[in-house]
Image (cartoon, rainbow, N blue to C red; front, side):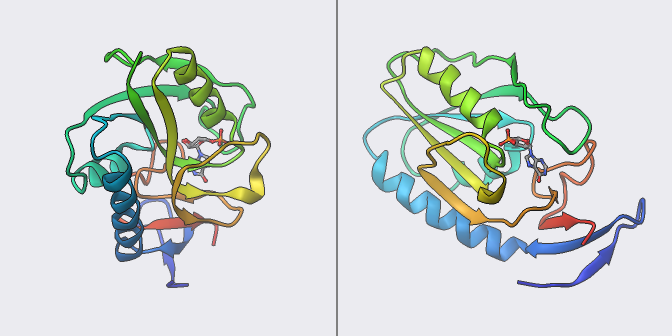
Length: 183
Ligand code: IMP
């Protein structure tokens, strides 16, 4: 893991690299292996949580070799600052019927667990045959609500992360690595 400090070209905010793209890719290949094994015959419905999960979902699905469908939900929780409001609200519902499907919720990060817990409860109410959670990153030190994670790629310490889909005020989502803001 590189500890290199980089100055942001646009606003000079300091950030420290936590995972580079090779490390991220390795984690995703591992998760994809498990999902290919577990969902081989199940025609899963992958539901990505917008916006942060879009990069992870895009890379993950290209490593999956069974028939599957993809949909999205969006849950608002953080607003434009770095602390969770503690409230979650559904702002985009899935278009594909969830009832009777084997659903895999694809998250970018489980932090306090409030958003993910809310999303999993919401999916559960739509009566899927099964519902499991797959997250690229787990930040266990920040947990406020217990959440069962079935597939997890990487662990992160406390600190605000950006890159690989994760944002701060809608910036940095396009960075290929994952960084901690502030160093
Ligand atoms: P939670 O409800 O605290 O678990 O947070 C879930 C959502 O908050 C994630 O899906 C992210 O969109 C966002 N989030 C949590 N931690 C971070 C972070 O470190 N950087 C960027 N977004 C985060």
